[in-house]
Image (cartoon, rainbow, N blue to C red; front, side, top):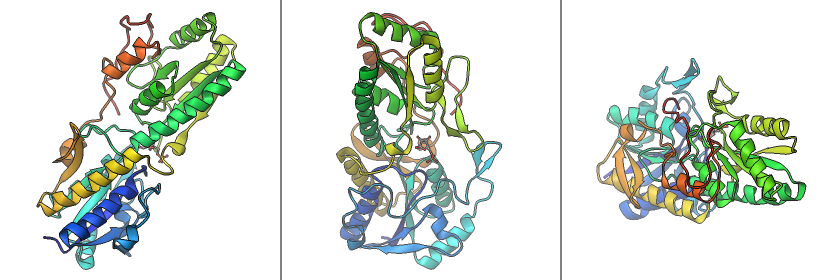
Length: 374
Ligand code: F6P
């Protein structure tokens, strides 16, 4: 059994990180009698002049409902650099990190993060250092797990935003466009669009056409609804084009909401406004589900370490937390199935995905499915 383990958070923050940290600490101390060291600012905390802190039960008291991460986080840090617009392991200061872990008396690691963090964690495992990954992302785009914590809170926030946009859209007879996060997947847009009663949902998996959007806006006008609510995923793609970036060099998506809004105004003459929800989807308190999932993931990660596992990630499969190899977990991006149940349900209740040949309720739509990239 390890005497002392480390825990860190990497990548973009997600509601539920503190729940996971708290569960790691309480499980390690209470169940296995280990000590826990919190590594600050992701893997950066074990490079150079290390910055870590002892985590006991008192140190994690009261953090369950808190947003962000008490340990701090870094998006790429020293292990990954952008080369030709792609995040790449140019220099791997793993040797230095491993030497520092030894000096700090940390014998194993729980790494909480997205693909980037997990890929770095796997390098530690490959060099014989025990590590278990905990997935987090509001995007819910990791293939190996049915859900990641942060996602449900992001949907709550996006749904509330849609509810609020609804009343102002209806009052002004406007088209309101809400741009939500999700990278190259439409999970947040699809779920919030359903929960927040959007009229049109634009997701990367179903390239959209403006003619189709306009048909929907006009059909609503003719039926007496003078306003339209549209939710657009930041990675949504106009048919024949590619995703839009606010910062292409660093691959930061954004801008499609404003583009859609402006084009609709030009094409229909109706007033249109765009709201970019941005980091409001990530900040603040996690909802009950994300607190629960973060807690379960954290505890299961420590149990896996205590069980002698390494190079694995905890994952939710069929409602139960299991462990899967990190390499498998990061291999594929989980995309919205264009013929899946939720898309079908959305269509059945009259929501348009603005596919080029938008159809009547229940009929098949024709669209091109983007299979590469992301
Ligand atoms: O992966 C989480 C996420 O919030 C994405 O939805 C979004 O594209 C990206 O991170 C934003 O990153 P940053 O915090 O660097 O702006």
